[in-house]
Length: 444
Ligand code: HEM
Image (tube, rainbow, N blue to C red; front, side, top):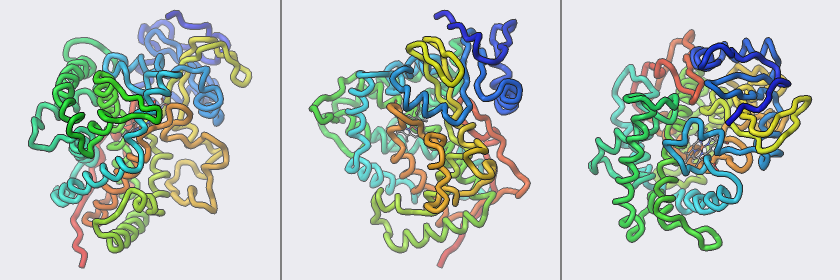
């Protein structure tokens, strides 16, 4: 597709280089962004390979693009750039009526009853797993990533560790890694490995599907295989498998990344680590093993600290869309077919919205201060509008359960001078894996 005319949008793209701004963008995204913001203000264009992208960093960008003009933007074309070969029929790669129809069926898997089923399954895995964490110097990201995968195998697919674990584990790791790699289809690139892994997973789940349909259990695969929306419509076999694989990708690194950032902030702020540990101890004293997803939602201090973690380090730092008609945004024309990128992370740090935006201050989300309600849609870690994250309550449930269980048995710390280096695109992850000092605690 020919690039639309973006001459009105400020910015000069490095036109002589075939890859445009790609290298500078990936090499040091924050430095790249700050330079552009200083030079051009909060709306400017960049060029990634042969595509010019209009990047919006101002506080109204998410409201305009994702909510008020939702219907004038297309999600599929934007995500196709990165994900087309890996997840051709994922929910985020659909729009309009088709998206609404598929979403209404998938939403069945995130209602109260299935959610309680997922939590029951997690209860069989989480405490036993964490008990075995004995390394005094673990790297939190790889540890939490592997743990998230183990939870996903059981809760999403109903596969326990003994069933073909190694092969499926490798395929899932390959496809998840490919989704945050550059879409370069050369032999041995992560993207090519991801395409191969997809083929393996499709065949694997196809074999399992009749069993999940005829003998459904509590796992997400069984729920999707048998889900019907309010009009009694269901998904066909191919669609069930495509959505399942997409959900795995959408859930995996985002959850592992958030848990890692959560651990980082609790290590940097021992007062908050103590506060949440006290809340966790009281919670499990009151409920023992007999608690629901709704009970977990009532962990108030956890809620504040998790919100603040997602503000400081949203796993998806930006989301993309493509204009389906000529539009006007503020004083700029955005022609049809323009690729637009909404900068979630920048909105989360806008000094006109947040007090001391670079500090970790969970109380800013308290009822009294409610900074997040000052300017609608400047806080969007789970997106907004039609594509709002369908798994957000699943994510919150899992993160609160894992971190509260960890706090009961372990203490961890980093040097006060340590600042976690992050690689913010395509997904925000720590460059060093977040090494911590960790010890088990004895409680009477
Ligand atoms: C902290 C963890 C998570 C974060 C920060 C997150 C963030 C997001 C964001 C920003 C979007 C919107 C993307 C867009 O508008 O283009 C999204 C969509 C989506 N997420 Fe999540 N997500 C998380 C966890 C999960 C989990 C656990 C699941 C499933 C179990 C999930 C499934 C999905 C799906 C299926 C979509 C597409 C929705 C649609 O297009 O209608 N996510 N997520």
